[in-house]
Image 1 (cartoon, rainbow, N blue to C red):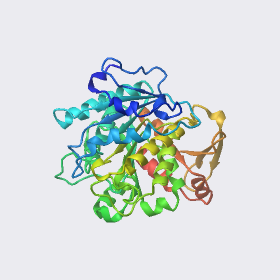
Image 2 (image 1 turned 90 degrees about the vertical axis):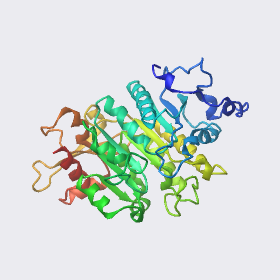
Image 3 (image 1 turned 30 degrees about the vertical axis):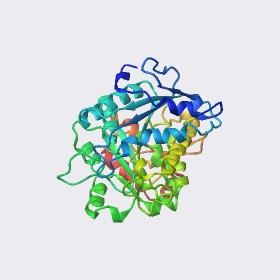
Image 4 (image 1 turned 180 degrees about the vertical axis):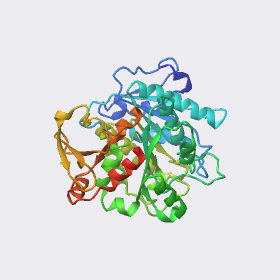
Length: 390
């Protein structure tokens, strides 16, 4: 790996504590334990990377120490019905400046993504999502970002880059490679009403906590449409996950977070996962670290259930439906997978759009979107994607 010099080995004690149980996940992870013995990445599918950076934590300093807290629990979980090909590449130390840390992370991620290895970032603060985005920008790849967070992190006109403003930095950067942003689980009392209007004006997808909790399966197509998933631990309720300086009594339950992690793992498009803002200083019993470790376990399980479905590349694996809608030409085309029974819709593969946007013209959806179209109504999901393509 060309960029290994940005990385430091993990604590050897984490491996020693595993004992002799060969069924533990830690026994199946290639670990970077020695400067002279970097793990080989041949046939590797997933790479774990700790980031010791919290200068952008916006009041949650201490989250730089999260990675080893997560590893301690992750390594002790048993393997599932899959043969994991995972490497733990150690930690990126805090750079001389925070921009040095961003640069190191983006360079490492770009190299892994080009090698078809899915990076999972452990710890640090959520502003590291900006570095994740830069990895794709470096590859000139137009992407979708999904954030599971109680707020939007767009800051104000005056704020500099930190965990509460990284999205603004991504939006204004030129050239821009962000096609769509989705927020799952925002809580209105943490969000300015003007911010909601701004998100809607950009045709971004935002979903309140209550709406999602009553229909958690609706998160599956949202996660299936993401290239990056950025997860802020503060979106979990404090009774389940106290490990954050500003933990809130309301939020997702741990099992709901694990279900979303599994959906993310199953998503063929999803290429990078970041788990941010766990602060061990507020997590004395390690419960929050344990939840994130279990989320990684479910993400890995989902990854090994990927179907590699593509309505355009593999049309033989799909049933095609054309639903006539008044005022919409020949109607809307839907695809239902024979392999997984999941749905997609064609928003404009026949439109005169730029080549880099073509992959965004096929949008994951649900059977409910098909039912809505059958009632001569255009699904909101279709309309928002169409407006962005135009």
